[in-house]
Image 1 (spheres, rainbow over the protein chains, first blue to last red):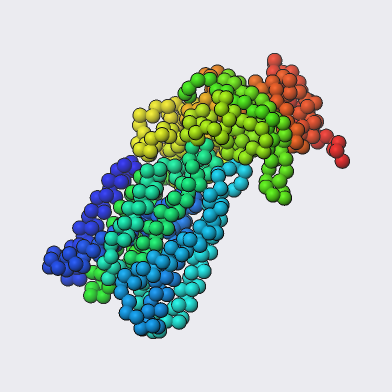
Image 2 (tube, rainbow over the protein chains, first blue to last red):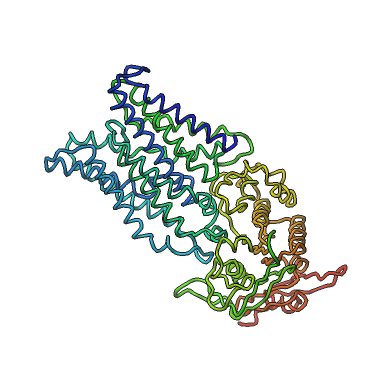
Length: 328
Length: 271
């Protein structure tokens, strides 16, 4: 498939997914009352779309930066920080008897994401800011490892919070960790973050393709390597932090959507980033529509269904590719 | 290839490998002058600084002392994107982390100023890509994934990428590695044609016979801090090369060309 064609398909899928998302309800496919439609479904679809788009864009950025197809938004440790922030807020609120709104949790998550990103830059800043040189190895592997270490540290804190939490809080916390759009009505933050991230990286996206072939080589083409890398990490951290604050730690989207698009022929970053936004948004909206209708009135966490649908689909895609293409 | 004739001047160059306590001097006081139409070959044992020299000429290796000028202007004073129009650098190793066709990889450095030229597969108007792929015997791999190629095939893609950058000065780090004899000769023809069309090349090579056939000039790095530069005839004689590598080397004249025959390692002289 031509890359431009794939982008059009992704845009069509995004529109169709949103249409389906606002029409699907627990009572089947039907137009709901105006109140439910505008107060519940539209914000939820917007939140879902923005979350999926932000995660997929962030995943595509991290894969390009670390030159690793296995990278996802969570390798930076930013999402881990957001989880600690959100769960910590829930724990503290319960311990002190403070009533906690969705906004409070989102704020806690955003603060955690910000702290984790600050830690990442404090640890990696000097290496990331070093000019590209053939004399030394590049910073991508250490970035990956430091990010994963921050993430592991955060997981430990999350486990600690879960053991400290009361049985009543545990359910809410686990749902949050699995990724849940239930009650996610603040769609504005994640859309704003997505917009900021795309404005930061998209105009120079082609340089990210060069960076993925080697820092020093990109530098010979005139890429300001350190600045490009730092701006891309900031964009990814903003998008991930906002997405996790909005809907919890939805897995899978950020890893797989860019990957699937590459398999469909969308390779260059200037196309891959917008296509990831469209594809990731469409994917989460569709999965969320299924999550709240398949076993209605029960609502499944969207993260669980995303993996349940996505894993077999992705494996099938990997194994059934045209001849002549080897290894993803 | 674009622009006026190329001019690369190296003066009193000193390069250092590693940093801090492990730093060691690669060579000092190297000077030479590359002009359009010339083909320079960098020769020296492993670790003598060939790759570092090429990277330094490209502006991506810290210079310990001395100056590198392109078209009369020291490297740090160049606007990086303008320099990309004057010289192309091809490293010894490439990272191919994601699927990409041979055409996409070869055309990577095309049309650098346009962020909108996004996917090589949509770039049907770029006939030069096909010409270069043909020239390097890559046409039948045009749509293959670069990661499915053999080492020699990948090497030819790297050469295509460098050629398609459109710069008159080519700085290629071991462009003959992994190439079979036929493709080594093809590389030689391509580089000779490039220099005759007004470009210049600086390449590192280990095959002395290929080096002799390609070079108009050469740089010898001895790995012990010494460096010399001059014409092929001045520097590429058997005794000098034997001392450089520490092996027995004999030169014979065969059908009007000098051939180097290497033998056993020479007894160590510095023990």
